[in-house]
Amino acid sequence: MRKTFVIALFCFIATQGFAETSPADGDRSPSREPAEDRPVSLGSKRAIKTAYFGFGPALMSNANVSGVGVYFSAAYAFEVDAIVIRIRGDVGGRRGAILGDIGLGATYFLIDAEKAPFIGLDFGYGVARIKTAPEETVHGFVLAALTGVQFLRSASINLELALRLAVMLEPSSIGHPVMGGLRMGLYF
Image 1 (cartoon, rainbow, N blue to C red):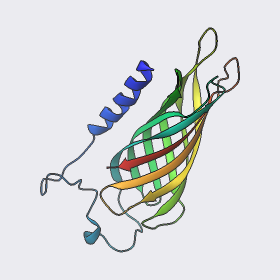
Image 2: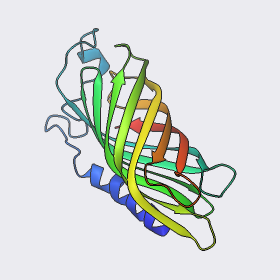
Image 3: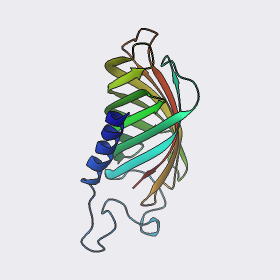
């Protein structure tokens, strides 16, 4: 659990180093303009760079645990038009069973509006710790699908509510580890 927490913390801290400030106002990213300064249409726009942090409940399967655990997500994201590309890390677990991964993710907004539903796909490399006797650790590629809604898309801080289902492609002795997480997060 300590290694997973360190990985999640590292991903979060690493994204903070990319924050940019405008010399004019000192606390606003130059790629994010206030809503009143932006055109009404959310059509074509330059790449917007943001950091992301989210958390919520998680359920695990093929990890030999039951009940609701915790889920954390951190990323550095680039938004161009209706697509967001993320360099990300996700980790979730319960009672010592953990599934965590780092990698790339892509999200596509289905409509161009302030409240926009999206679908996405993540691919990365991760580790899963399974509660068996003896305890088992599996390393391998992780594939995840996600869907959700992003709010306040033209503001400097966006709110996201997302559901993510991740599966490790390398099986353990009791099957492929799976984690489903519901997260609420902020792009800032």
